[in-house]
Amino acid sequence: MVEVVHEVLINCEPESAFRVGTEVEKWPDIFPPCHATKVLEKSDSHIIFEITADTEEGKVNSWVSRREIASADLKISFKQTKVVPPLRSMEGEWRFEKAGDQTKVSLIHKYEANAEHLDLVARILDRNSRAELQSIKEYLEK
Image 1: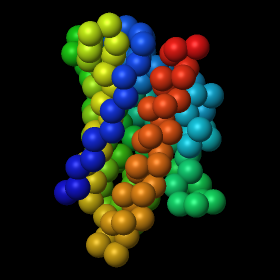
Image 2: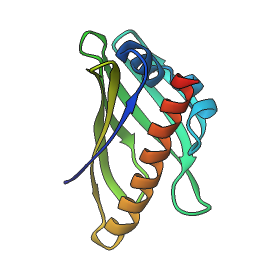
Image 3: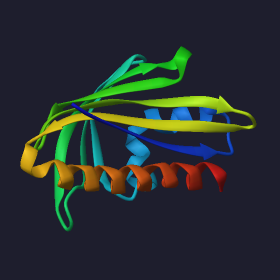
């Protein structure tokens, strides 16, 4: 399983960044790679939703993700319950931690993919993760 970590520092309180991570209904307005979200099930401790987003260059796909929300720890773990090939599995975690007078947001992905597509998946994941974290930063610092 491949593990990749992306991080950004944001001038905000951790709770504000955490809230953006849980409000998936707003993601199409915040995250450029995201076109649409549809909540399938939601409670205080989890959310299951379908997300439609850019993947390969010029290609848009949809998948289903389950998020476990740990409000006390300011963490959101996720696992794709319906993956899109060439992925075989995708899971990870969002972490929101105080870092001096800023918040460090960490986005951790763990995935398995067909060997011939590992480079492609790594490029897409890197591009989208950087865009998402930069978008959260801009959204919260405006």
